Length: 112
Figure 1 (cartoon, rainbow, N blue to C red):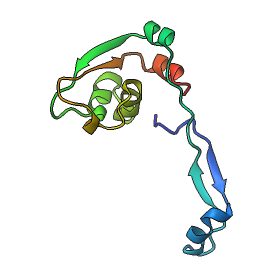
Figure 2 (cartoon, rainbow, N blue to C red):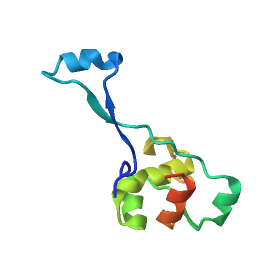
Figure 3 (cartoon, one colour):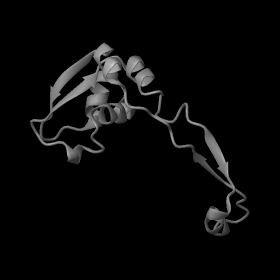
């Protein structure tokens, strides 16, 4: 199950994208995903979640941790979002991160 499975698909025919449509023959609109509206879990929600603490090592990747914990590398963004790190490059080796262990619970807490 991918990140955008519950995301609305928009048919964008706005004037702003006219230049893109003009480069494509007979293109009347552009289909795109709506921006997902995720929320940061509050302190109480975070306290109710089960997490594993993990020490970040050189060579670690969110997608590898997601594959290990959720059996699906496409949920890498859950671990990144929960810890407030947009990319692996923002984490120094030795940093302590939390990995929510119950995927369904954390998705609900994120408003997904």
